[in-house]
Image 1 (cartoon, rainbow, N blue to C red):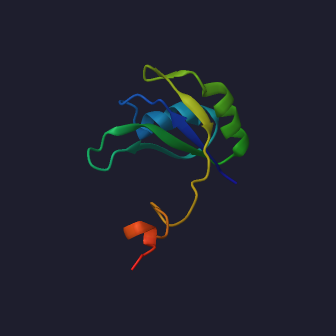
Image 2: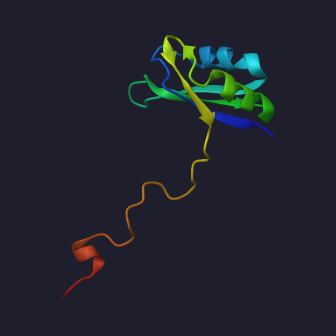
Amino acid sequence: MSKKLFVGSLSWNTTDEGLHSAFSKFGEVTEAKVITDRETGRSRGFGFVTFADPAAADSAVSSLNGTELDGRAIKVDVAQDKPRGGGGGGGGRGGFNGGRDRW
């Protein structure tokens, strides 16, 4: 079973390849992705690294959290699952008077 890590405070210059290289020292990395802005393509300053072996991921967290990568001290932690569901929300009853018409 694989384990995904969140990597924060990345340098704007960190690439997918750089992320992969920094973390592969701890075990088999199945994916390393720097998250980019959809419109500009510029890094958003964080990314995710997925390890094939959970023990390797744990080792990477304890060894790399707070260390420097591309000139910045990075934050490394186990990624939290993103809740699945219906997008951006808002409450169910929008509109005039919160959906309570007073006619």
